[in-house]
Every structure is written in structure tokens, then in C-alpha cells.
Length: 294
Image (cartoon, rainbow, N blue to C red):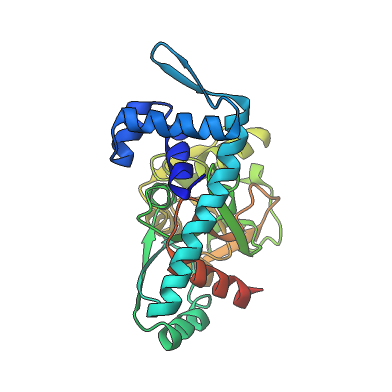
């Protein structure tokens, strides 16, 4: 079996439509059908069940899909590494960072390493909201993202590594009645306006906070912000309180106080990447960064 046939099988298994798969592979549908038939004959097993217009994977095909994806990914990575070692690594790396997250101390070493050994690589760092980071990671507009663990854990085809363990805090203005408290309960803020980013900006964050308030026995007064930056501005102005981790830029702001509270989520700062991204620059950067951060 050739690597091209493996590619044909993977594409067909994901599309579950021979015409659509053939279009993506730039071959004719009959040619694709012949290739799939040849694979089935070589393996002596049925891989697809065709009923009228529907196509389904057999149990054997489901197993092969997982294993063949590993083989195909490893093949592409090996070819890319070989090519780069021959010609010198070049290309572009796009890294997305969660808006409001303080990461100034994370990248200097690896950026200096790339500047010295891979000067032809262009590295772009940009800030995005929670949802934008996920969307752009899935679409391969971003190669790596720095975000919070609760927003990437359990997502399909995304892997992550925790960079730094952090925890939730209730953030209040310095003149808030509880600003001097060493420890607070979420229910202490049942009469406060709780600022949070909107569901359009984050699928997970508002849900986690609202569930925590419900578990604490109250329905919060909520004011949604269009971004983390706006959320922080309202807290600085004393309009409300919010839930943030200590990796947030606001942590160093003298107008607010970070108060200890029982965990609401796991906001540990994490580096995440898509299993469907084959940028060789990403692999080298990721491995260098994670080695330095250990």
C-alpha cells in the first residue's frame, strides 16, 4: 500500500462521500473507487458500507483511520524535517495569545534561539479572544495558541500542555468592601454585578462562572463585556467584579485586588496545537519552548 492510497482512504473516511472526497483529492470518483477497492483487496477486508447514497465506515475502517492518520502525519513531518535540514528551516509561524494574558516572560529564550539558528523563519504573535483562538487553530490560521486549560481540554483534534498552573481569583476594585479579605466565597458577591465575557467571545468561561454561582446558591447580576479588555476596564472603574487568574495583566494593576476563592475552573496557562497542522516550524518551536519551560 502506498502513502497516496493511505491519503485517499483517510480523505474518504472523513468525508463519507466518494464524490466529495474525489473532489478534494483532485481525482475522478471512479478512480477513487478503484483505489479504495484495491486497498480493500490488499487488506482482505471491507472498509466502507455503501447503502444507496450513504457511506459508513466498518469497525475495521474506524480502527484503520486512527492508525493511518498517525502514519500519514508522521510521514509528512519526516519529509518536512528532511527538507528543512537540507535547505535550512524557513517559513512562517503564527501564534495566538489570549487577550489580557501576561506572557512577556514566556517567549524570550525560544525567540532568541530561533533568531540565532532559524533567521529565515518569520514569527507572528497576535492577541485574540477565546473563541477566535479556537476557530483560527482549527482552520490552521494559527499554528499554536496560548490560552487557558478549561478552553482546550477535551476538544477534538487539539492537544495541549500546561505551561503554568494558575487558579481563579475574584477581582475587585481596591475600594470594594471585601478588598482586604484574605479569602472569599463566591456567594459573598451575590449582590455585586459580575462582569464576564459574552458567550460570543467564549463558549466555556461564562458557563463555568454561571454554574459556579448556581452551585453557590444564587443567580448573579451579570454584565457581559465584548472582550476581556472591556471586562477588566469595568472592574478598574469599580462597576463590578470578575473572575480571573493571576496570569492576567490586571494582576499588576494597583487599582484592583485579587482575592482567593474556591476553584471555579482550571485556568492553568496552556500551549495548544491542532493535530491537523503539519507546519514543521510549529513542531520545532513547540518542542524548544516546552523544553525550556519545564
